[in-house]
Image: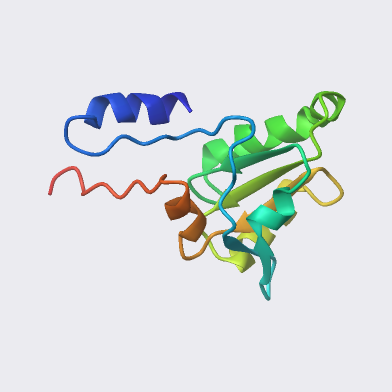
Length: 139
């Protein structure tokens, strides 16, 4: 979140502002993402209806910080999250369902409140206005 705010502030003159966050009560886009492989379609609007859910968009499966810190922190905080009424944590990346399924096994999220979802066509990312498609630094 902080990185998104800093990026927005840094590039605010050159590009449109990113929202980068949602408030309680916001309507979530009813976009389909994939679960597992072969992929099963999951409509985010339907999946979130009537639940208290944390949706986490991460830059990619198997990245060192995501695998070593971010996902393990959600696993470690499950009791606290449940005590606050959180029903589930949905982690999504712009990867395909096979990669996300492999990463879920690697992170041992089976049986936890965490579900990994794939956004292979960036549809959810686009609907949330979170696409970061910067030109290469030396371009």
